[in-house]
Image (cartoon, rainbow, N blue to C red; front, side, top):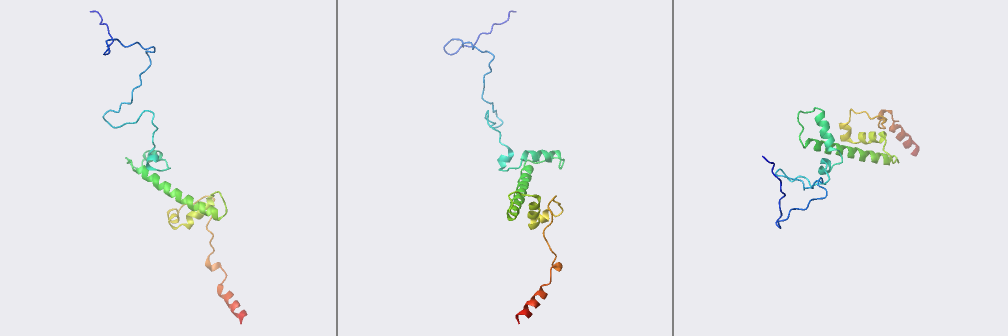
Length: 163
């Protein structure tokens, strides 16, 4: 049996299409989106989960660490977003208070001492981080009232001098 000869299809005008000069060139087609969703347009930039949630902290990295840490057999989609939001809030709170402490000490740079002062002077943060030691943080300035000089002796001298 003789092999069949392939004849190119003709257009409406009855002429065969002109041969292209570069037959190996691939024809670019729009991305097939199929019946499973909208898909992404070709060349569009990916949007991170952090950007979608309006966060600065990395949602994807937190999700990976939650899965890799074996904290649970399964990790929901919202868990890393929520955790990233909580961590970002706590960080912003500590940095704001530490910046205020640095400004009170007439410094432009936050040091571990300023972080220590910020945490220990805030009731809720102090309760959260009560068992945490901050390296190079020092302690809060505090003199026990028993060690202070007696005020009654000072008042007695002032009273006798005025008479």
